[in-house]
Length: 389
Image 1: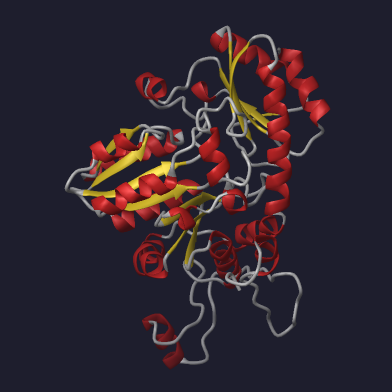
Image 2: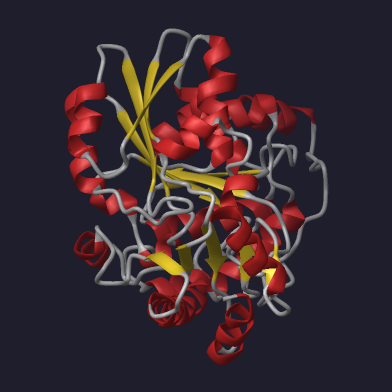
């Protein structure tokens, strides 16, 4: 199916399996386990000689439908779904890395990702070098004989820096390392990293794949051998599993993913242009703007600029907090990817637990504000932000 249908069709139809009741909407299987016809069949399914569902920690029909749909939309062969975006990164890392391995990671990734690689995994003998997301030479210079993984997020959180996936993939290939790309901000509706040379795609399905701020979820998409022979085994044993209910909600979100992403991107571009003309706004970060340093790359690599607009205010944290506190419509929350527009101060929330030095290296200033544009009226959003400006 993934080779013959367009993205919008895949989002609605891919991965669907029907029961004997011939339902049109995907069924929700709320069960912890599955019954076998006899002891021989149970043994066969546990050994893998016979296919079938066993236990919802690692095999469930609703989760399987969500995995197959997302794999088709990303152009991958297989997908493993997890409990959250961070558990997807952890599962990938624990399955593919071991003590003594080296990771090259963009310094412009989500704060919890920095903590995972610099803190938790470092305790297990996995060392990470953090490099510029936009300087391909930085990635090349960071390579060591024991480098096993490149990890990047593009566009980055929260400055929307755009990494050249194809160029970094070429460096990773020469180094004999895998390239994993966090595609949270764009989703397959706007960007397909596997087609640009990435080995794996990571998702926080909590964000745009769900799209309405309802559930947590994560996913890893890539070649069948890498995903199923490597990462699935970790999920089966360690159990950072996606619940069937959450998988069902995400399945429903995937049906409208392309419509939402294109509409929210168009609204974000309009808002970014408006912000550029506002007094007190020192700089606007949005890939769809001609003023963005990687605008040309973004327009080649993405279908649109995405729904995240970040901007820096003159006056630092006091000005940023004053703006945020003045809003009456926009939700003050660190989440993103919702149909409801959200606003946050990254320096004291999403990136508040990393060191001041790491924030400075990532370009996160005290005056930076991040807005994840939803589906409300543009006039109402401008009025709400204008109150604080």
